[in-house]
Length: 416
Image (cartoon, rainbow, N blue to C red; front, side, top):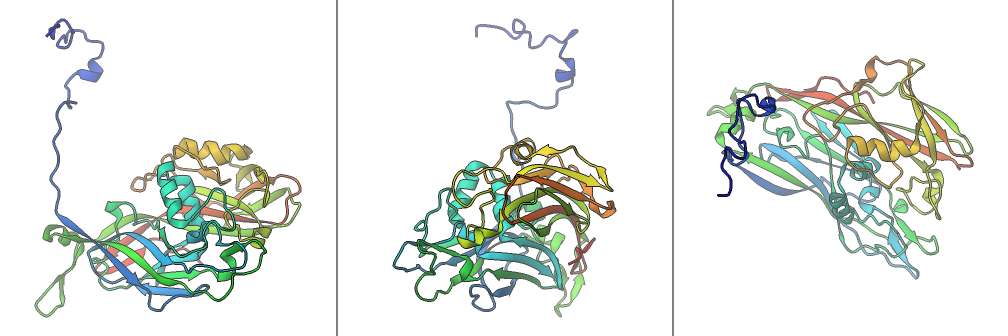
């Protein structure tokens, strides 16, 4: 060995300038010890809807009890191959375009509703590039969409992002909700919104969805962990003991959708319908005439050609007082997500965060309580010469889910 410990000054303790770093050490970087875990088994199951859903229809399914917890859920379906005398394709991002909305209902109460547009926005804002690229393959999203990009004949997969889908400690405790049904409802968009062609005429023939179902990850627990979630039954199959009360922090999605007349350059959006502690706001502006070519995820100022921001700047007001200065579109689109999420999207999606760590689903890090705010407004300054536009504004709020004696309820119920 070329040098001793003393020569390298490792063991010198007197008057060390780094004593606030090394006095009474608590960790070694050269030793590790793993923790043993309680055993469990993942059980992936396909769940079919009560009736075979068609384009434009509402479908629902009661979640069977194949495990103690429910984790990830994805929608899976097969699309028939489109035929035409010209190039024809399903519209861009068909996986999200098919979904009008999907919601989870427990004991007759809607706990959260997600929208196809919102699922796309979440992917673009919150997923890292490699995750996003794979996710785009699942839903058939193309950067440069053409009329022959995807004529069908393939399986499409849409991962969901309810509050319980991604975090193990927040998995839905199905066995604890023993006295209520958990129901998933899915509203599909009509076929007329889901195709593009060279001549703007629909494909030949009629088309039906096949094999539309949910892929659900169940988790089966060992006896020790079951005591945290499952009731104990006597010999007559009556409950003799319920597990302790459970409380979960959850997130919910609220939405405001308004039309903006053509040529209008200043819009004040009333946000008084938003409630509860809101973690962040996300919004997009979309031309009404994207319906002419079913380009539902185009949030720019043009249908074709060189795109730019339809938004110039935005400002928040609470109680008629400025909550922020006017913030440029570039800040809201690129710098805000870069600061708080770590990356941004090129999809012309605008964000404003009230929390520090929006990707941390288990620990709140800030919010703005819209329940106690009057006259909350988002004032948008738009560029000149825009056609009629749609604003889709989303607020993600915190809520508490309680489960006791086989029944679940929300601390605060979102009004319709």
